[in-house]
Amino acid sequence: MIKFNSLKAKIITLLTVTTLTVAFILFYLFLNFYKKDKVAYIFETNAATLDTVAEQFRREVEFSSEIIKVHLENTKKNKKLSLSSADTLPEDYLIDSMAVYQKKPRFKLVDKLYKKNIKEMTESDVQRLMGAQATNDEQVVYVDNMMVTVVSGFTKEESAWVLIYQFQSSTLQAYFKASDTVNTVLINKGSTNGVGKFQYPQIDEKRSPAVNQEITATVVPQLSQNSLTSMISLDGENYLFSSTRLYQTQSYLSSFVSEEKVFENLKSLMIRSIFFFILISSLVVLLSYFSSDYLTHRLKKLTQSAKSIADGNFDQKIQDSGHDEISTLTSGFNQMSTEISRLLHETANKARMESELKTAQIVQQTLFPKSEYDSAFIQIRGFYNSASECGGDWWHYFEDENKVWIWIADATGHGAPAALLTSAAKSAVSIIENLNLPLKESFEHLNFAICNVSKENMMMTSFVGLIDKKTLEFSYINASHEPSILIKKSTEISKDSLIFLNENSNPRLGQSKDSKFTSSTLNLNHGDRIVFYTDGVMDIRNGDAKVYGERSFMKGIVNSYNKSTTLAGFYSDYETSLVNFRSNTELIDDVTFCFFEIK
Image 1 (tube, rainbow, N blue to C red):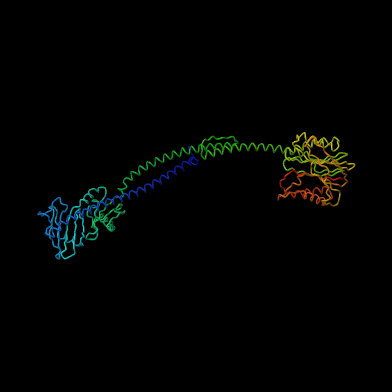
Image 2: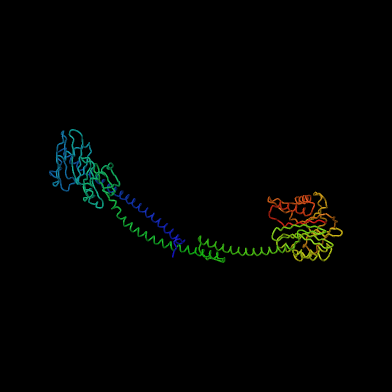
């Protein structure tokens, strides 16, 4: 069952309507072309036939004129038309009658000669024919019921000769006898009443004289040329009218062909065309049905697969061996299905990894000490911000009865691998701090632990400081890290007041188990402050992509120190200035710094 609003129904309707519309237009154009071509053919054929008959009639008149000249010459000499002793014309003679007249000063009969069965012309007939006096060597021809009357005048002098002769036109007789499919008529435009009349035969003997008068009134005014073709309407019916003028006459040989008769064959043609049109329509509907079924079947498979994907089954594959647009769509659908399945797996993996990273981030946060620490001996403030879920920066402090440890480190890169390395460092430091070992030996143990964890494939820069609480001696080791900054107690400082602790430089942690480290020592006073930091501080960029840099870093330290007399105020002001510069732009590297002050 085909649904009316389905794609299949729409395709069938579109193909059927389009094909039938084109077929109807072509059929309509064909009929019009057929009609025009048929009319043109009738006009051309009738005109050619009439011209042929007119030409034969001209030759017939000229031949008879040659014959009659002999009789005229004999009359001028012997006052007699007959060329023999007979006083009638032979029955098989071309000429049926002849009479010669001479003007003295009126025309008088000189001699006449007739066939036995031909009626002689009356005096009134002769006077009517001579009413149109012929010029020299010219003649006037009249046609009346196949009888051709020729009036020849030779001079305009007082003794002018006029010859009148008659003959039956075999050309006209043959034409009218053969014209059984068309209405033929001979119209005399130059009749004595000036209206025109039919001479032979009437167009249709069954029609009334009124209709014949209508034909005369319609056709005669158009007879102003030697030949004419036109479409005329008579008594509510259309006719194809053709006419040609006969030689030296005012008579027009004409034919009337009924338009209905012309297009008689068109009715049967239209009936056959309608049956053919119905057959074509049926074939079109069938072809449309099977074509649409082929197309929609493949589209239906796509639709079902799309629904299956919507239900969560992304392993759909459609087999299609075609090479058309639907095949391209099917191929694209299969690629889309594969891509969605791949993306879902990637999304699931990514979600799992994000969950694991989130867990790692939570775990890593346990590696860091509290950001604020106050004791009777020391005050500490620290800051950490990772560039990703897990970072590679790490800082730490530890205080017991005799000493204070402060660590800061930066693992290579950032993310999960770097976070794992910092976790290993924290674990090692937690043990080292309780072994009561010298600074150098403690640092070597840390390097050994980092090398074992990273297999010497990952490294870490670090700066560690150890404060003796009794002597205020500060020992430190720098393993390729940014040097810490010592700020002696003062009410106001400048950049020149910043003391960079860079007296020693050692290999990075994890570079080699055989690495050797040197330490440096200096004495602190109460109120002295030291700044620990990683290189991520200098790499911060603002919204205009401007890098924070070393100069801004030192300037910020100096300005924040001078604004506050306490470590807490110093730290807070510097943190605020750094956050304002960054303007929430994405971090390129982890950012870590910590300040401490000896009380």
